[in-house]
Length: 223
Length: 324
Image 1 (spheres, helix red, strand yellow):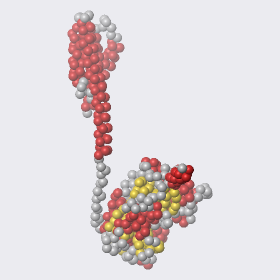
Image 2 (tube, chains in turn yellow, cyan; image 1 turned 120 degrees about the vertical axis):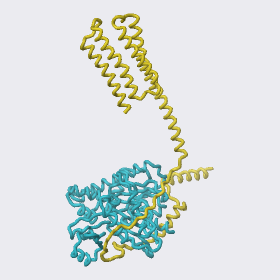
Image 3 (tube, chains in turn purple, green; image 1 turned 30 degrees about the vertical axis):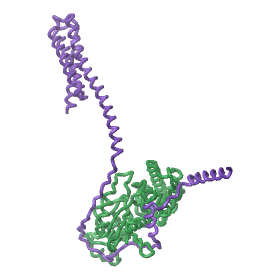
Image 4 (cartoon, one colour; image 1 turned 180 degrees about the vertical axis):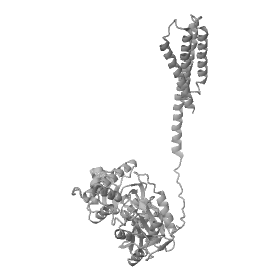
């Protein structure tokens, strides 16, 4: 919501600037134009620029550090516009023009400066936070034990079958008898689980060990 | 006493020791729904068929469902799809419970049952926890003490005792293909792929214009996996989809192994499951492995002693260890 509010402020500022520019073209403003038209047009542009900047600040959320700079910048810009409205055209000459223009420029510098400072501050903070997280992750991986989720015990209630069985109530199916004894396999499985069995290593490893042993044997014979 | 239970999309197999024999009880995981009539019931009674009556419906269970499907010109339905309980089949739970009751029988005291469970697929959003916990609950309700292991691990338990249960077990089922790589009986990698025999049947049926049942029948009876086939034939389409499945499985196994650091030992590969039964399957698998290459040393590639019963046998071995 906050984002949309400030995007409206930005659009409003941009609209004022565009309207001012349109008026300049439409009225073909020059030094000798009607003072009301000049005042009206440049007030629109003069207000539009700081308002648009304020909208950008709001959209990006840069208010933590730039709030003071923003307020100061806006105040300076508004003061300069008010002074322009008072002084133009009768007292609009040196040094009043320079004074008003400087005031307005300082206002814009304050607004831009605040934004710039905020951006730099955020970048520095995010890097510091990243480093902190990295160190935290390492600590967590190092100390956290794997968690085993206990399996729930489900007790099934009987279905409401309401069934009636046909013939042959006992076990059904194709029966195959094989002369076989799984006791040997079960015993082996228990022994393997107890660590009492070995497994064949790769042939190339055996060959490598044999080669080393033969090499040692031949050296011993030579000695 | 201990029992192993392989609950697959196509078959449910129970295994147990009886003296010096291992007894496997196998039943199709399927049913046929018929409208109730005295005539139908009398016919089923005369044929000594397993059925249940529920409301105005008669459900024929297991293998009999397949036999009677052609008589009544109806399609069989399956309580499971893609390796887990079918969410589209409202009768799935009652039917599978009834088949389990009939295949497992009644327990003698506190019997341990090890149930095979699919691993989480890497190429679909299927989550097998609900399926696993529901089966455990159903078997527990019958009076057994159930626990589950991955299907691929069951193949390793069944076939690789002499290699200290170190190796790669692959179960090519109807709904899923389950793969486990184990080192000293401990799984290093375990995953499943949402493609299996049903995927081959469906795609071959689409390609050739035949029904899935016809394709399945040809696949189970006379199909041999070879690369010189007649173009346009069912066998040709089956060979194409088998080839695609094998490449897909081996490529995914290669990727999964590359993610871990497997121990520097020799890994034998054992192939099991109904989809691995056609002649020439092992040779085609070997050829694909040599083409794709795996980041571990493969000592041998062999078929399970009985591809259909391998998972159930592995489950029985696991149950035996719990019993002792």
